[in-house]
Length: 173
Picture 1 (cartoon, helix red, strand yellow):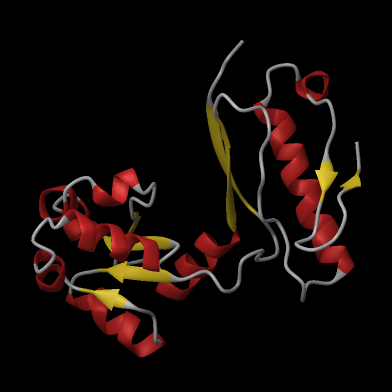
Picture 2 (picture 1 turned 45 degrees about the horizontal axis):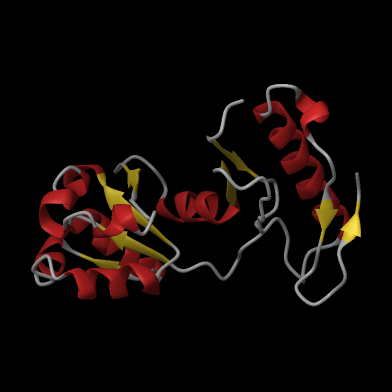
């Protein structure tokens, strides 16, 4: 049996609207981020971390995801060390041609399936302000995508539950 696999899918409706994203960018992206009121840092302020593991860890904890300009993404491991990688938050690349707001929305709408040795997985696929149709859309999309990741498809799935934060789990399969 295969013990680990990984897959990402972009959902139609954003499941995590309050996700905090930080831009690590060159001047062009810093200006865009400032204009759109998105948290950001330039190379100089990243160098101030001075590879201090505790500071980098704290910084990684503050945000859910990072976007980095293609100009500086290659320098990041040199500037920051392995801190962001260890936290599982290595930045996604953004080019100057891409629309920053669209890219930020993209990240908020993308969920990641990761299967390690444990045979249970949890994902955020909806939030309280979504309409039942949108929630159903997201659930269908993500379950079908999960099935495509599995070698034997539905034969590999014992059961599927849907659970809200405070509510009781509902079995759907």
